[in-house]
Length: 363
Ligand SMILES: Nc1nc2c(ncn2[C@@H]2O[C@H](COP(=O)(O)OP(=O)(O)OP(=O)(O)O)[C@@H](O)[C@H]2O)c(=O)[nH]1
Ligand SMILES: [Mg+2]
Image (tube, rainbow, N blue to C red; front, side, top):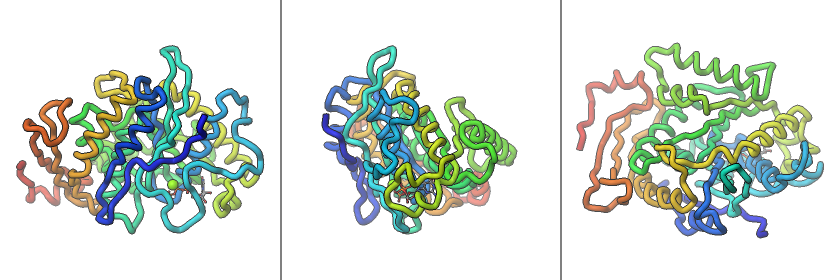
């Protein structure tokens, strides 16, 4: 079997416009039996330079060694980490949205599920227009059935502010095509500093704390984030600092990891891959989607995403959303029955009041 490689699904032009590579999407989602099969797409989003691609490469190792027991799948002590592009650098490494070209098949009671990995450009890069970053993450979300939101140290207000914006855009764009923005959400905290108890247990406490803080705000600043984090399908996992040799080195080997990081990486990745078969992509009515069906939806909605104007340029910016809504789910943009809808929203509720005098009328 071909070992696979990263392929770029979404690239950006000089103006920050998104272009979906339909051929690449078809290769990943419609070939080699994936087209007729249920699919699980594990996607990672979050701030740049926080070990997202690094983590996906360990997921790759696990998926390649499904039979390996305990931590044997992690590889040799000195095996350099390969797969999605990653490295020590100040500048962003991943650009646009990428997927691993080869599916990994996992058995379930209902038959085999094709698991695919999706990597995404970091979302808080100063050099990138905010609207572009948000659209990329919203695209990645709409593709995925298992969403990881990668954050540094602890869950902070900007992480939630961004989550709120991703959810807003993914919800508006996904709605017309019957796609929920999030099916399963993992908050993955790297270099966790907020708790003595790490892992899933520490994560549960941290998530409870985050929910309480959000719920205590009046009005809630990030209502969609609170709603998403309150679902039973949302979890949090705290990872320790990996050690200086990982954070400054370019090998990513087991040998370079602090032992507690290695344990937690093994624990998190093993549990995620073990549950992947239960996280197949569904539409908003709960109907299972095959690779071909998902690819068709993504192709149609990428046009909507391209034209979408969220208006997010700063976290506290009012938002006018111009959305192309097809007349029927089966119809794509450009058909006669389509209409443009413009919805007034804000990045945060606190700004709604400030901007209430400036309501933008529906077109
Ligand atoms: N501090 C810290 N560094 C990590 C962790 N995991 C990986 N790294 C290091 O972080 C650096 C960046 O890793 P990448 O995987 O390229 O990060 P990324 O989030 O994909 O970065 P962009 O693609 O630029 O957004 C590398 O030097 C990794 O070794 C972690 O848990 N904590
Ligand atoms: Mg990356």
